[in-house]
Length: 294
Image 1: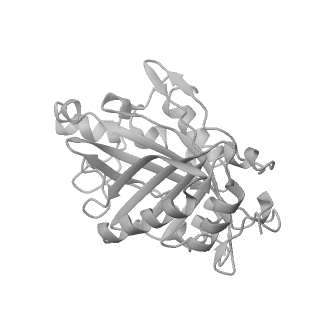
Image 2 (image 1 turned 30 degrees about the vertical axis):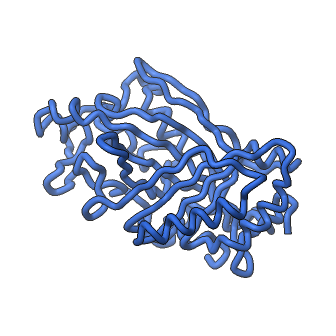
């Protein structure tokens, strides 16, 4: 496990800042990434590369694709790929700001910052609706097997694939529901986090029961709430050894299997959707050998 970006397997931090960057045409992307590899420790800062960036470098990473745009009954899931993603983890907002500036400076001239999202832990790790998030996360060895590449060779083992979506909540719609409706939407009681056996088939927990897929569709969730003024939601982050488990979950949520859409869409929807490859670590720095950078 020493080859992984340790922040992926660590508990959700108190605070986070997410940077979404795009490459500048004709710029020295190679040099900028080598600088980034020196800055990132994989624990306090986690990095992911988009497929467009890997292709720009003249390489391929097996399994790395573009986030699929999909739709269901009255539902549209956008695909908004970017080149580079940085997840800065910490417990001091000022320190995160300075660390973000350091990364931006190191990448200046080669990458342009497209979006910054600040996130935070709410309570004991809850969504802003008050429901516990990530209850079914795999733990210990199961988490490692679900989230990290193994047996693929140098430069690939210890890597991870991550799906990132910014979800926007409609709190007025959510608060207009009765407590029972809210619980049935999620499929758990907010009061004690107990799963409801008699929840409708549209309940989020039933739609995404990871053990109900064949093969089982376990992902390692590291989502955090975000807020900007009175606008807020969830920054959904799910790591996997591939995108297969996430896509199985997503297809069922939009009703691709049986026409039943996830009740979550009654009060929330994604604004963005992007995939990234999170390279492994070697000797305390990002191992970019799989994309031709030492």
